[in-house]
Length: 151
Image (cartoon, rainbow, N blue to C red; front, side, top):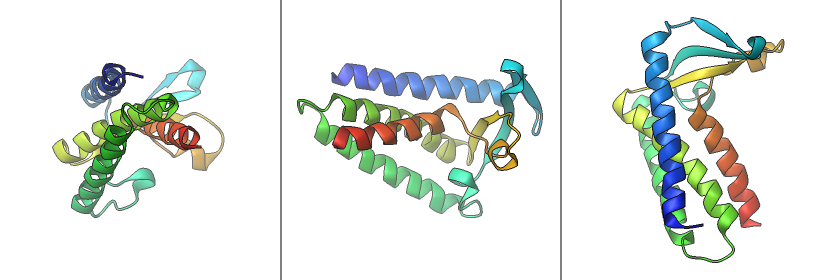
């Protein structure tokens, strides 16, 4: 996998998620829901001032610093992995992870919160209450691929 492809993946994730977040911010009120796919997916607007599952919500500066530090560590691993043969899955995973991390870190530094906008319309209350964004999905999928690519 070439550097250009990896940077392209990161850019598409960053710019795509930024575009969606701006649309959500401009078109949905706080707490308003729009149903997609027969209510299986709900669009909403939620400002997450913490990390995953609102951890550290009252410590925005520490959350932003941690997000930036983890981003830089992942970027260093990415640079170290470039040019190594047989590491395509690892590079793809890192590209997904970094694209999502850039987007959420940008939100934390620029907006002081991350815009989350997707929920599952399911009967299980605990799952229905989780709100995420495209970047969160890319971070989770990327982390899984990084683990698989490291084996």
